[in-house]
Image (cartoon, rainbow, N blue to C red; front, side):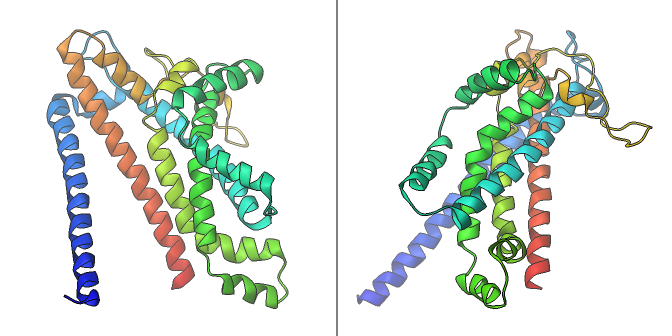
Length: 298
């Protein structure tokens, strides 16, 4: 067998192994999701979504939990995306290539592997006590934003680095400044990779429990945060940022830890809904990524 035939065989073997790994991973995900749906089917109804937590498993719901999770994810995305993208663009396009920058790059990469409880302890001292955010949605969202910030920075840098060099050179040749090249060419072409980083980051953040427990998430709550919308100009309110909260992972942990087996049915139903929220969030990000790519290439 010649060298070329051997390489072709190895290529086919790699494709088969990769396809098998993909199918196996999707099968496991589908099996877990199906198991959650089957176990939680008795509680998967509108009442479960519109009821507050209760000591009676048949009356308990996840209204406060899913609303709190949605608001926390909103704060997380609004904090992590601009900071992460700005940091990545600075490191890739503006920062000088020296030893100090190399140390920053190594530490950013290492921060992605730090246990989440460390971020919770950091947020407890910084956001809760130093900045006086209290045990609030703002503190939780900021904590999870710090948690996923390294992921967003690394993914954005890779996306920016993948933009072909001739695009930059053509813009410079036409008299564009560095910022114009970055804002009008580099960033739009790399937006697909940026959104991919946000998908990965938010998918991790939505299931985190340790950091928000550390900063004081409530395990039982029977009210909703203040509404973000008002009837008076400017029709927006940010009072909800300072309200106490709970989240889906906290609610599930609370139910699983109880001895009554009926609460485990509630936990399974909440898990299925949480996974559905994650898939919906990822689907929205994938759609936005497709729209950006369509506008650029088509």
